[in-house]
Image (cartoon, rainbow, N blue to C red; front, side, top):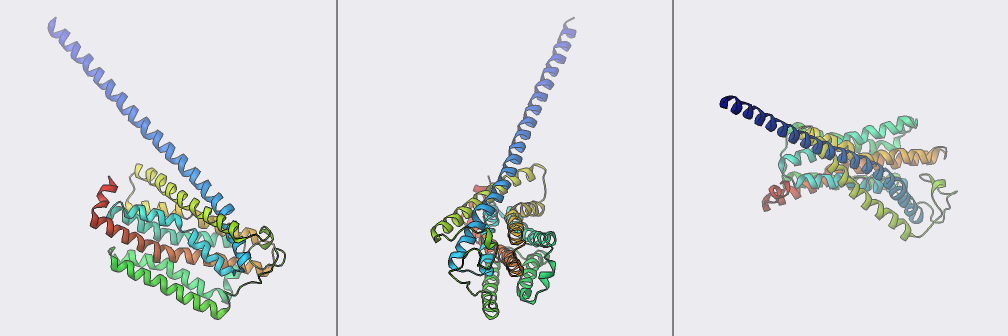
Length: 332
């Protein structure tokens, strides 16, 4: 009788243990599901915040400032391209401070962003039926720079160049060379000529002049532009953080993580391409060409800033954190 009681007690004890273990597993799964749900919600909110920031703050502020200062469509596009690269800057610096493996994800973020930006630009071109404008000889230099900015990171990936300060200096030299060559070619072709300073919205030639509010001081325009840039930086950080949490939950390799982050951080460019083309619809041939000029320069300046400025900054941050032993501290 005693051995039966002992056996029954052991069985009941094991059952309680299995039940407790099952409860613990269920609680852990519920906690993980809740965290992933919050990350997904944060990702969606950040996407919406990014779109609103680009449309209402960055583009409107840039157009007001361009109208006051008489900037050309090319100058507007370049500034917009640099502004829309802020999410990549935040994401790459964050990955660079997390160690070598995370830095690989940062590189693929840049490489994939440049390819995705090109695909998004072509999607906007096809959607608004602007493909014939790309055959205009005035856009040859921008198309050439675009091809270079897409191929360069792919060549680096294929050759397996290791991250170093030498590589960062070489890429920075490429960016400075692009900027100098583009500036000189634009001057020769008259693409940087200022528009008349006294233009009204009905007279102005440029991107969506009729949609631009009446001329105001540079203070308001700069405030909108700076608020938009800050909003993009914050949104870029939250986008990268929430996307990385979702991606790590399904255990993707570093290069695929970078590609997924590249898709997320290309949202500002996507919004810009469609917004600029949409605002120029029905505004006449000159303004349509201005929109294509601005979009091409947005694409090129964003891509060149990604590979020639942002990634080198990430390499420098990685080298500094590695020498100071901060990568392991931050990664924990």
